[in-house]
Amino acid sequence: MTINNYINIKKKCPSLPILFSCDHASNLIPNQYKKLCLEENILQSHIAYDIGAKSITKKLTSTFNTNAILGKYSRLFIDLNRDKNHVNCITEKSDEINIPGNKNLSKSEKLYRIKNFHLTYHNELSLTLKKMDNFFSCKTALICIHSFTPSLHNKIKRPWEIGLLYRHDKKLYEPILKYLSDNTEYKIGKNKPYSGFEDVNYTMTCHGEHEKRHFISIEIRNDIFEKKNITKLNELYLKISNAIYYSQLKLGEPYNIFAKKINLI
Image 1 (tube, rainbow, N blue to C red):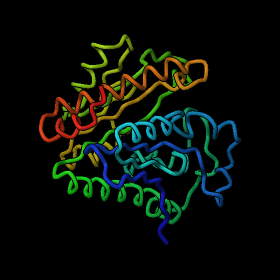
Image 2 (image 1 turned 30 degrees about the vertical axis):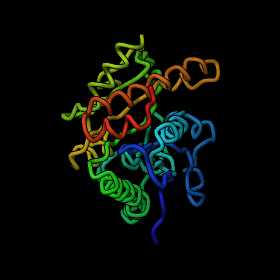
Image 3 (image 1 turned 30 degrees about the horizontal axis):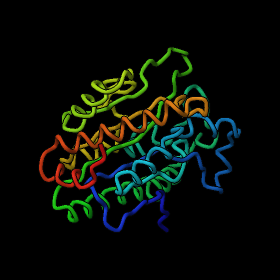
Image 4 (image 1 turned 180 degrees about the horizontal axis):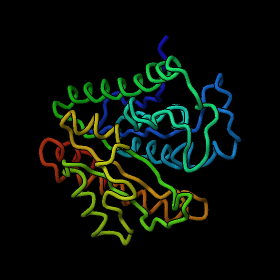
């Protein structure tokens, strides 16, 4: 049995060679796992999913008329942004909170989750990217969307409103950083709050760097998604959209040709 661990937003004729991914879009746990024995308030918190990331990803997909792959289940069940062999792919503790339903798992249960939930997501990502490569006759860029909490259990404040995570390829990072730096006053984390070189960025490393395509991970501080900050969120969304568009213009042909047809800015 193969289970689809993803939500695939497909456009019949996408406008740009960009695929958005959102590994931590959902806080759902498959029914048979009884919420991993967690209270509802834990499943509504940042340790279960990236608050706000799903809505931003869907909005970007609409703005750029392109495709997206979103995770269907919580990262507490299986973390799609970790290598399948990573110690926290199926974590027993997150931000000092124990995950009872992940304790003392058998090898067969771990393999079941990896095969039917982790691999299906990444196979779909790879397949969709290759289909888009063929459609556009160029390498499709991968933009990973995440959010981060203003502080962890140690209460140390994270001052950045946006984090831009990159590795050796900076073809998206540099123009996106330039646009945001020139046109906003946001505090931008450069490989913050995490570094793209850490082992917690499996999706962009696997499908971006290893497949020799342009990529970036964009992180948004999740308190900006609170209702009281709706004006700031709308402004931030506009600036991020424009920054992504600007990056396509700066990539040169054929990317700028596709972008000019949208004429976003």
